[in-house]
Length: 176
Picture (cartoon, rainbow, N blue to C red):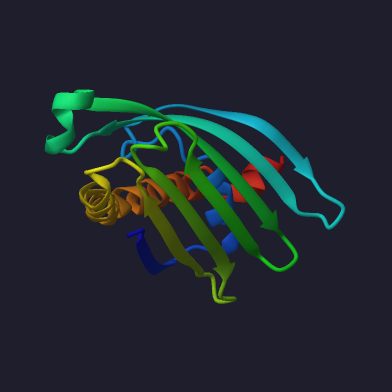
């Protein structure tokens, strides 16, 4: 059975700050598991939307029941696609591991949108699926629970970057 995690959150920052912070969220003290982040592609399409593709390497812990087979930690290669529409103030992201997919495939869909009052809403939908015979259900359930715990760190990391942007003058400072 595929596990689905859904959640929503409101950031007390305007859309420009949130989207800029999202694109520049690594490194931050809440993401020590992120080993590298590289932009593979970045372009503005015919509709004026910024599209980026990033390659991220993260180090993750494995569940106790998998350590005899795979060890204690596992580096994972992640592809991240982002589309920012500055006219509608909507940012869509898709993130997924591109390795270890037999063990676990994690697909995260985020939708950030301006609420018009200097806050930004984010809606998350994450799908966990495993094809590892005999461990499928346990891996999916463990991943679901772990993701829910890690979400707090992700948000704190993004909030940290947003606050740093504000301290340094934010978007206006970067435009100069």
